[in-house]
Length: 260
Image (cartoon, rainbow, N blue to C red; front, side):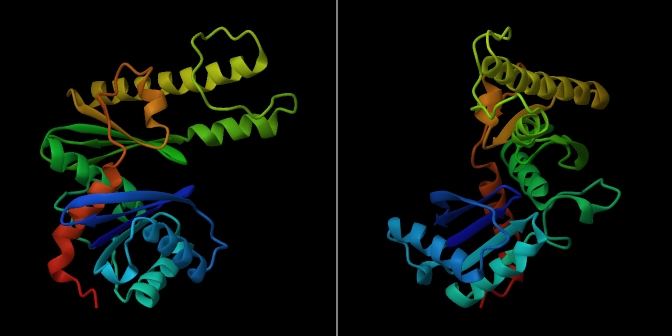
């Protein structure tokens, strides 16, 4: 079985593949203060619910944008599973040329998503990932990572509004039916959701104009579904895009890696 782990700034998403099929996936809160043993207990407990033993995991791949957690997860794999994971980092085989001034600055999750999207469609793409930040990545029809844009994430903006405006409450993130709010909560929900829908559609349209092509648009990340419902530019939501990309990169690199 293959363990795939995506360590993000807000959440850690991991899943298990068995003979190419995603058995299940789980989401943990990212917490730098958690110890190796605590993460091992959490992972083991969630796998146990699916009747999966750590001893059944024979390979792993990890992408990480939180440097302080990379070594702890390597230790989890070595100490509790007995394997050395593949790390998505500069030098890993991706099969994708990267047109970025400094490729080492590029978040591992963005490359993973790009590889997964192009592997599926083999055409020009814009991938919008709704995470702690909202990222837009453009992949050419030839399968080249061309670059992208980064905007503040939805939840960051919502929390900033609550923290910096003393009379505004913390609200649930839902999309109201109308833009003209009749109370403060309604007004905040309308501004955030419809504001981000406009942000996404605006950036996607500008990227299309800039590259002079009509790329297919894939959305992923925890809040992709919320924005997709009101967007005029997103073609598809793929909840498991990053996990799929990790599996693809595992296949490309497994023969050149020593897991034991």
